Length: 556
Image (cartoon, rainbow, N blue to C red; front, side, top):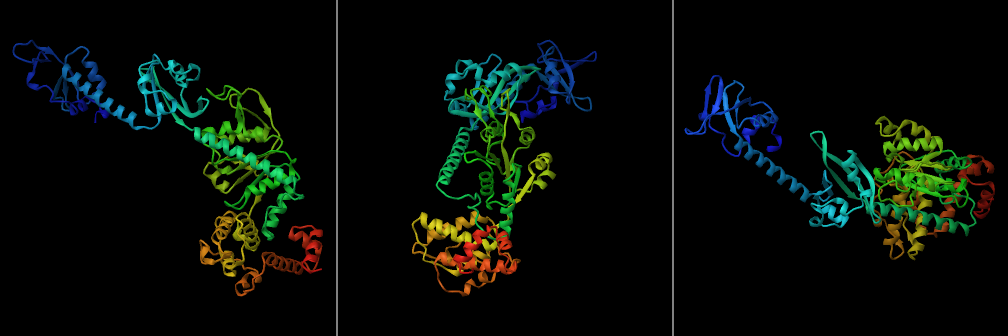
């Protein structure tokens, strides 16, 4: 393969034809001459070793038209004429050109190459697609005839040797790309530049739509809240188990201050629900709640998304500039979901903002003061990530002022009944499909299942049950699992749950819930020896609420 020629011997091994015969060589006075035929004069030869580099071989032809090669034993091994060397170099050039053209034709990426005079020498199909300029129109012409020179990063690379890696770039108002550039060096001088662009317009647009939709959902939630007479922001968190009530109790204490909160828990346990509840309980009604999913934003776009950018920060960027998520969270809460996925280089910049409450927009010179609360969440083991040097230790301790651990569903199985009935009621109303019969066998199976996807999986499963129950009857075969799948054997379920399989009485959902709630309150009163104040505290409700429940359930 001609790409790996390093020595004069490699040239011989890739020769287009046989080297000149040694029979044409003669020696005289310690010198070697080459005589092509009897009627021609002797031509002095240059002698080099086979192991000499290709550069030495080419230099030898500057003053000699024939070069003789010596092997390791210092014996004549071959002679090469200038004509043969020209043919060999021509072969190399044509093969390299064939490979180059094939690579350019194969790639889907946008690749453009300009020479030292700014003329376009390469323009791939990907470049045609992104910039809408045909190959035949731009090849061999100055690139500045087609684009504003102030927006051409490739010119900066050509003129200043500036290298760019994965930089956000907006060559048109409707186009967003990540650009890489490199200068082409030859003999210590720049003879051209190469640029490669990747179209990320769809990613940027989807991210903008997601952000706008999140804001709209938040606005609608606030509008709905105006018409509800609720004061408790934790009302949407279902469950009466001691595990979830203890977590809610800690979250309520956090609401009285604006400390940074780190929410830990498996995927699907409701980390964002807790974050919103803390925000609503501690901030003003119209305070912004801005969410960033650290695992969904490309690393190259993270800085501009987080800090925003000033006018002219990027070539072709929005002339008005753009606010980042931190600035949008001013006076409210910034929720950093999946914080364990944040790029390492961004962690340093985030740490500075958390410490100083100041930051600069990308490309900006004005320092912006910001007052906001940070709530972070992750399902990753941050301590393990720190050991792997994928998460900064100083950022971990800055975020970990208050830790809120949300237990998985398998650790609070007594909440499964309440959650199931809640979602059953929700979907039966949404789909206008009343449920007449919920088999105890189905509930028993759901109580024994381990729920690796937690509440999210439970909600999806209940929706599936409602969808399949076209006749209003939920059957066990509608489940995607059985009681033997992923069963946890350690906790003991309450007696009323264990015996549900033997109870064949069908009651309304409200009656079922009342009976279960009655048993929970009776059990709690028994544990605290009838102390209603302590009972209400342990159940996570007010004493007035407890008295109302006792009266309604006939326990007073």
